[in-house]
Length: 387
Ligand code: G3I
Image (cartoon, rainbow, N blue to C red; front, side):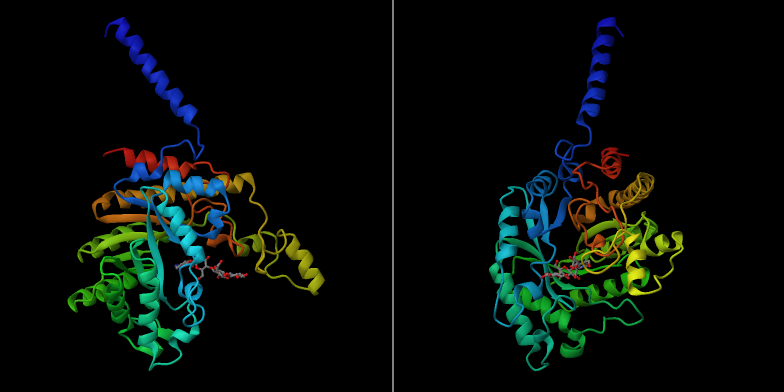
């Protein structure tokens, strides 16, 4: 190679290295996640808390092109009392999201056993009319704005049963799911309708979900997709996710990861107590308070507020979370053609349902200081490596 060309080559290599170094890990500088993973859409669970902070909104706009309201679109929030609808928060969130030209809005959720007002299922002679009216009211309000819905959430039993023993099965019977999807399709024929659940990588629950959706398709029920929530952790076997994707691909429906976060890797209350020789606080209430204070006091909901992780604990947790994301996205890459959207159940580590108790988790690709974590770079490297 002529000297001149060698110099140009060397300069280019140096520039690349510098730009990479210059890029650093500022979440507002690194390559947008939605560009890395395209055409798979990348979503985040956001809500009113997001709109209170410019950095949260900027982080969403830069890296995500799909959103789900973490809580404000759920039945208890939209129709706490029969016939009284509250849409102002989800409206604000939806308007913000759709203000991003490339973003779409998921609806979560219409029918669920949790965060569901009791009046919906207090009278078996009225339950289907009430279900229909709730679904019609909410979907009509968001018609043209929400392109897909988690119509029924978490209806499959975690134990030996097929469906969860909930107020819905007790009041409306085993076929409430069919009815919910039929009503949803009548309310908005253009909306994509998902069955959404957690733990669908568990072989037994996987098979129940497969049979549930297969039966719905055979009965002509309008179900378009499966939402695998994806509340995963640093110790699980990600080959189970691979097996579930393979199984669900047989159904020919859309597949989305709807609530991805990766828990664990840090100290939890039990191990912390063992470590401090405090299996259970004992003594008088005052003494208990003193003992608990050693953990850093109480969290807002009365749970145990864990102390700040040490730097060593944070580094250990970061390496475990990074490795788990590498395993997860290796599986996703294998199934990339059948995965429609991956929604993280949050934006960054400074806000996660996982930490509302006393567990210390760092479940996302961006940390609490709006920096891209090692997990972000691991995913980007893995994804950009075309092998
Ligand atoms: O709105 C009330 C507020 O008025 C009150 O002062 C406060 C007191 O604690 O509670 C607030 O409600 C909380 C609600 O989040 C809104 O912040 C509830 O206590 C709290 O339990 C609820 O937690 C949500 C949880 O669903 C409820 O099951 C989490 O934020 C949310 O991330 C989580 O999301 C679920 C998905 O919808 C379905 N899949 C599982 C996932 C994790 O549980």
